[in-house]
Length: 175
Image (cartoon, rainbow, N blue to C red; front, side, top):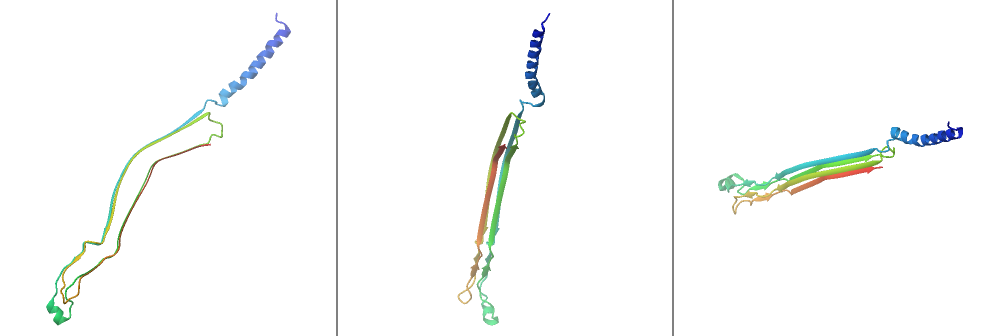
């Protein structure tokens, strides 16, 4: 027979062992201590921009000669030519945005043992931008020593090309 003293010792030992093991069993069931969070973000882009912008008030011509008879007898103008152009403005704006990754992970809940954030991007960007403004290449002909001279008056020529490229931007916040 088992003595009462021995039974009490076995019972106490079993209670201590069971009491020690229960939190471990409960932890496996309700509080997953092996949880991992993997965030994977990967992008690739091929971008080709080919932009040509041209403003032109040039390439004008006036030709003629003196009409001597009209000039003398009818009070008309004699000869000469006149070209007056306005301003030429060519403006090109190319904005490219590609491959932006953003990850925000809040781990204050205690839900994850390990958090891995992987972000990767690959981009090929080719920007070919040509901007041209022209008020030139004007010509006048005609006139004589008795008439008025030729006049060319052009405006301003302004060409502006702007290229903005933002690619492969990654932001990761783990708090």
